[in-house]
Each structure stands twice: as C-alpha cells, then as structure tokens.
Image 1 (cartoon, rainbow over the protein chains, first blue to last red):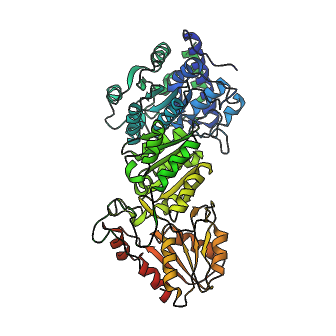
Image 2: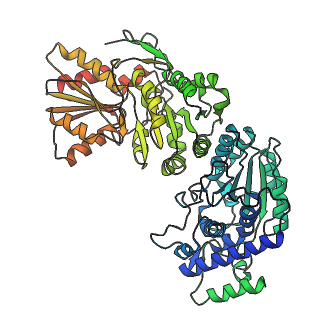
Image 3: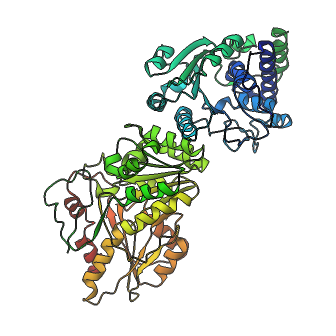
Length: 280
Length: 329
C-alpha cells in the first residue's frame, strides 16, 4: 500500500506549487470543454487541495474505502471542478474522464455526489459539510482510529445556521482530529458576501477552535498552518483561507461576477495561455 | 370505553402515553430495547437534541455513556452528526420530537442521510396528538413530509410489542429510517406472537367482509378496541395494520380492500398526505372503488391540551371509531 506523503517531514513547496498549477490546468481544460463553470472558486482553492492531497493527508488512492484514511469533505459541492481535478491527479479518477465534467449523464456532475470515487459526502446543499465532519471525527475517535477529518466550506456558507450549530458541536465533542478549511473568497451567488460574517477568525476562535488565518494562495503558509493543526490538544482546528477567486489567471481575478463564470468559446485559449504565462 | 386514569383536564404537555384502564403498559420500550441491542452491537451510537428524557433514550445513555451524545437544541446538527457517524461505520439512532426533526431538519434528512443511504435511524417522538403543546409541538404532517423523501423508510408502530421489534429490525434495514416513537408507559396491544415485517401490512383481525379498517400507529389499537365494542351488535370488523408507511404495502392493502364492502382508514395524522392518501391512491390505481371513511386530523393547526381532550375535540377518539363503524360516516 502506498500512502501519499505521510507523515510529511518537510513540505516540498516547489512540488506542491507544481501540483497546484497542474490542478489549474486540468480545471481550465474541463471548463473550456463545457464553456462555463465554477472555475473562479476552483482556481482559488487549488493550492489548498494540492497541500492536502499531496502533503498533509494520509490516504491511499488504491483503496478509497480504507477505514483509516483521512477524510476530505468538500461542503461546497459546486467546487466540483476542483474536486475532480485533484481526485484525478491523485489517482482516484481517470484523467481521461475529466472532459465529461458537467455534461448530461456524466459521472462527474456539476455538483459533487458521494457516488464519485473519492468523494465522501453529497455537497452542494450548503451547510451540510461541517456537521458530517464532526460526526465522522467523533466516530473515528470512538474506534481509536488515527484518521483525521478535513472539511472545506466557504465564507458564504457561514450564512447557514447549521454551520454554527456544527461549530459548537465540534468544540463540545472536542474534535481535535478535525481541521476545517474556510475558503473566504468574498463571493457568493448574488455577488460579494452580503451578511456580516467578519471577523471570521475571531468567530471561530470564540466558538472554541484553534484558529489560523493565512493567505490561502500561499503554499508555504498553507503547509505551515496544516502542520500546526496536528496537535491532539482537545480543540478542533480552523484555517481561515483568504483566497482570490480565479487565482492564477488575472483576467478572471478581475471579474466582478466570478461566482459562475461563462467565457466565450474564443476566449478560453487566451485564458489558458495567461495561466501558463503567469506561472512560467 | 376505557378511561384514562390520569388525564382529566390536565394538560399532558409531553404527551406521555399514560395508564389506560384495562391495558397493560411497558415503560420505555424504545430506550430499554436499544440499551440491550447496544450490548450486542458495539457499532450502535445514540444521539439526542436535548430530548433524552422525553424520547426515552436514557436507558441507552446509562448503559453506554461513551456512545451517547446530546448535541443540544440543534436538530440540523443532530442529523448531520448522525450522518457523519454512520459514514464511518456506526449505526446512529437519534431522537427528538417528530415535529422538530421533520420541520427543522428536512433537507438534512433528505440529502445528508437518505440520499447517501446513511445508517441513521430517527426515532421521532410524540407524533400527532400525542403531544399536547399545540401546533408548535405536534407533528401532524410528518408522514406527508417524510414520504416525499426517496430512499427513506417510514415506520409507525402500534404499541410496545411492535416498537421493540422495530428498534431491533431497523439496525439491519439499509439506509435511513424514520420511526414514529412511542414513549413513557406504552400500551401492549398486539398479541405476543405478532411479528413486524418491513413493508408488510398485517391483518390483526379477520371480519365478515362488510367493514374493513386500515390503520397505522396506535390508531390500530384503537381500531381493535372499537371492533370489540361493536362485535355484539353484529359488526364484525376486519383490521389491517400498516406498520410500514414506506415502502407501502400496496398489494396487501388492495387485497384487504377487495375482501370488504367499505373501508375505514385511521391515522394519528392529517387525513391529507398520510395513510388515507396512500390507500386511496393505491386503490384508485388498481381500479378498486369503494366507500371510504377517513378518521384523522383536518388540515389545520391544533390547540394545547390533554391527549383525551384533543382526541375528542378533533374526532379521533374511540367514540369516533365506533360511530364510523355503526353509521358509516
């Protein structure tokens, strides 16, 4: 059994950055095939996914149902484009399947379902991820498993009351094997984040989490923060990721309406060229 | 008719089933059975949303404190944590009032549980008029709501005998199950040899083919009481108990209906969207057209009061059953 990079002694930042770039390439390929998608969020979360799947998490792509695997829960099911990219890159999905993203009848639908290999929960109905992560963390601890649970959710999801119920649950049940990754990209369906969710980090701290706040597109910062979250100290951990939607492609980063990106057929090649140019 | 020993004008807000004259009762059949089952099945965990005492799960907590979790007044989180536990191999029994878990956590039951076939067993307390705290506490449309969720099993047990079997059976029923729980001193109504079978309606009484009653939950016991009362008057009523609401035993219901000239359908629920709707849909589809009297609740909200008071006021009490048999209305 080959475990991915565990326990990681020192993060190989250059290699992780290369992984993140490959994820972005895959996502652009998927989005250009369909002509649209949640590409801005995908590009924004790519660094975090690379750090998790190629550095921090203990998992085995050959055995997606391994009982002691670390779990990654993507609560924002519409980030599926990023999920499929990282699952393909890690070996859970066939890279050749990726072009079917979002196409009618595809095994890689626009929102994530747990029928896809490597996907742990049905994402997309927002506010469902954290509570299930808490339950998994509690159950794994009952079994004496060394596995940890990593749960991504977004700043927009902080609008959902269930997120806060679950946050209290994580602290109540002392889920120190739980790490939440809050993608604060500042956008939601109708535009900028609308309700008074800030200060996110202070709120998580007040809810009983050991909290770190970092630039979510800074690989070294990601690896360092994840490293700090390994302590079994009775507290759930939160990393507040300040990410930029469309990171890596300035034209998308500059878009005001980045929640669901539609790009003209003639523009995709230019954007992909931009990604390569920016990361040359 | 049997009288309650303790109700009178007193509001039994928590809807406890109390001693009824002439009835044997059993205390906390749900919790005591779950505590026993927990000894045999270490993968069972128990949860409540601040309704441990009022859902009868405390015997499980006392027997297995390391496997019991009170998540506070947070029904969404109750269902999510149960789903998460199930997805790492546990069988999660969770408890609160039926009204709260259905109205407040619907999306979570549908997506986090049913869609994933999560091993979550929801024991939903005090359905219908078993709760005396008025519309805020009375799940009078829970069957209607829950039957709308695909891949969900729904059970409405009649009495302590059936409930105890259901507690055990659901551990091996794949996926998410919604059970209308009976708490407190729960009457023992069914014969000792009664066997719960998932998805199978059970004939509790063979009649003479005139009147057939189709009922669910504790209304089946009331139907048996009513049948005994009118027996000496020449009414020999057949009774089919539909313990499983979903999957619904269409075949059993249609067969039973065909053997009778008219039907009475009874439930501790609104007459819209619950058992009556299911039966009538099934009969109509099968081309079986016959007179039907529905005993159940109107499409309304209901007031606070004792179980006896509410059942009389909203016409689901024993005299209502007897009238339906005698007068056909």
